[in-house]
Amino acid sequence: MCGIFGYVAFDGKSLPQDAMPRMARTLRHRGPDGEGWHAAGVFAVGNRRLAIIDIDAGKQPFYSADRQVIVVQNGEIFNYIELAAELADLGYPCATHSDTEVILRAYECWGDDFVKRLNGMFAIAIIDRRKDLLHLFRDRAGVKPLYYYADERRLVFGSEIKALLDCDIPAEVDVISLDALLTCNYVPPPRTIYRNVRHLSPGGHMKIHADGRRSEVAWWQLQPRIREDVSEEEAVAEFTEILADAVRIRMRCDVPFGAFLSGGLDSSTIVSLMGRYSPTPIKTFCIGFDDARFDESPFAQLAATRFNTQHHLRLFKSQDLSIWPKISYHNDQPHGDVSFLPTYHVSELAAEQVKVVLTGDGGDELFAGYDKYLELETGAAGAPGGQNPLLPYLERTSLFTREMKKGLYAPGLLRATAGQEPMDQVLGIARQYEHLDAVNQALAIDFLLLLPGNNLVKPDRMGMAHSIEARTPFLDYRMIEFAFNLPSRFKLHGGRTKHMMRKAIEPLIGRELLNRPKQMFTVPIGEWFKSDGGAYCRRVLFAPDSLASQLFDGKVVEDMVQAHCGGHKNYTRQLRALAAIEIWYQSAPRKPALSLG
Image 1 (cartoon, helix red, strand yellow):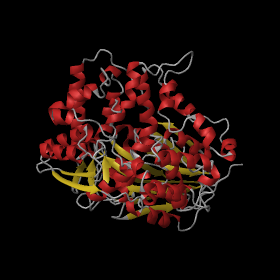
Image 2 (cartoon, helix red, strand yellow):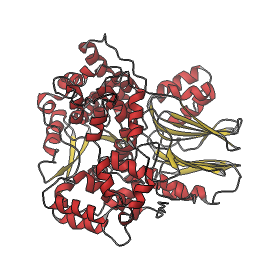
Image 3 (cartoon, helix red, strand yellow):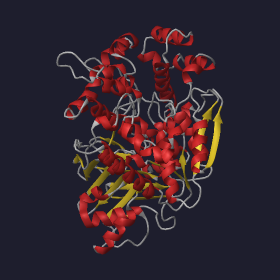
Image 4 (cartoon, rainbow, N blue to C red):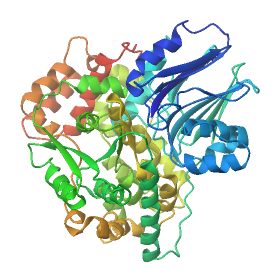
């Protein structure tokens, strides 16, 4: 796990002379164990290293023997041992045990197609001086981030947006992205909250030539092929085999490791499987709350006892929201999801003892773990006429409806977003997968947007804030492809989420954990807003220099605060999103410009 950064300066002089050391300093939290970069001619690539594998010999960049190919990566290649053996047989032996050298030798051996052989989470940059170009690759699910900015003079890339800002790129609020955030609760990729900064798409490959030409293609795409003939027993066996191996190879590291354990189905399953491959008890980490409605720690303790882990619990008792700006700084963008707060704290707890954790992220989006999917099973999401049957479901799960936005938005924001419909991007994905039933369409939307746009941002950014690596076995590409080839009846059945998965994991985690009620991993911020947090919310949203005062109707916002704090309406999701936007704006490394013209 590291941070990468670099540029292509098409005119050879359009970046600050100290661009590389500045980006390296900004990303130090992603890799406190060392830094390295290569800058020559128009190309530059760099790395901040968190040493996980081959501590002594894994320093980046890696160079080919003739120094014509230069490689850096952020992430881990979990099948690097098998690939190294195959490459040695083909005449491309590795001199180290580093997974980054495996990337270099694989590129030398197989060219651009090498990436299809990787099982991992990664963002990779490769300078090929023989072809006078830079390659950028991102893993299939978008576990590892990779952002870029491009104009006619340069392309700058990095693991975090703040590193791009070090290169003096324009910092401007993208009001179209902000409008999408207020629909989705996050900015759906490939857009970002910055007008000219984009994500490289998950499974994406971009080529940037020295003369400024660039192209982006998908080296991997989600292509479900529903297996109607598979039996439930066969699916259970295949699920267990894939997940067990995904856990096994994600335990490969040369540093102490552990797991986040909430006591939920996903994290409990991962910890159970980890116990198969560890000769010593697994270290597990959990955050609890003094509000029982949000406290999962008793279930985590139950799981820890069952799996004989070395369990570590820290109670988050305070209603102090003072770390929210720090979290926003690490995220680079506003997120309405405040489960970033407990993820920050559990990462801080884990970092006291380990450098790697396994997590249960991805299970809900692959196997329909959220209750919101249940209405799709019952057919309640039906729509009249030629309307997409997912549209009512999507509108019900939106943060602000179109009608709510009309009242909330100030005239300038209404004009700036006129003619834009954030739901079009979501419905475009539904149309792409219209051969699937509504449940699998909804899962495809969440896999392609929610995961890389929000849910995978949490373990990456909050872990990296404390210099620890989060690994996600459920997002092994074999599990992704398996899950999206299953009929939806294996996921939702009889009003029950994760139907087939529950059958597979019952022998692993036991009935008590299996049948526990699902709780969201979040903080009771809606309740806090009704007490001390209400004053905090007002201070944020009604500050004299607030972004909110330029974007929103102040009376509408005040009415929402009053109704929520008075217990008349539940505006938790809406108020925390508005607060998140303001906190991002005020805590950004360089205050973004706003234009509503």
